[in-house]
Length: 120
Image 1: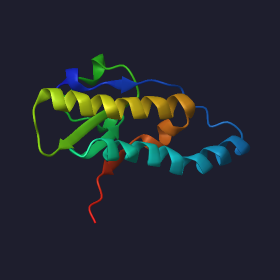
Image 2: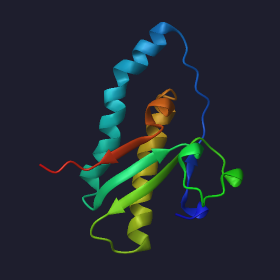
Image 3: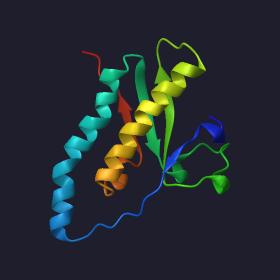
Image 4: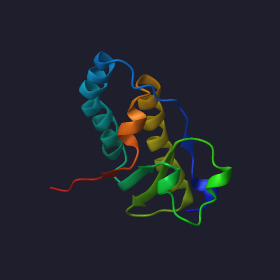
């Protein structure tokens, strides 16, 4: 993945009081469910990873990246080209942006997470 394909989300995380931490823990299942909902809207999406700079591949220039979280390793099947990839990427980015806007503490939860379609 080239540096141009890595979009990011920036926010400052304040863990806050114990009450705030309990609120965050209570909302984490909703955070995960909202990101998993992207799979329901995009049947071609099979996997994506949310990483911080340290987790990015060595060939990506971390010096020029701004932000904390990056969507990587998007797996699509069947693949239909760059437009499809961009549409799926935008759907994931919208979900991440909404979750982090509503609950900035979700940054720590999302960092390093892999989301994979479950097949039953």
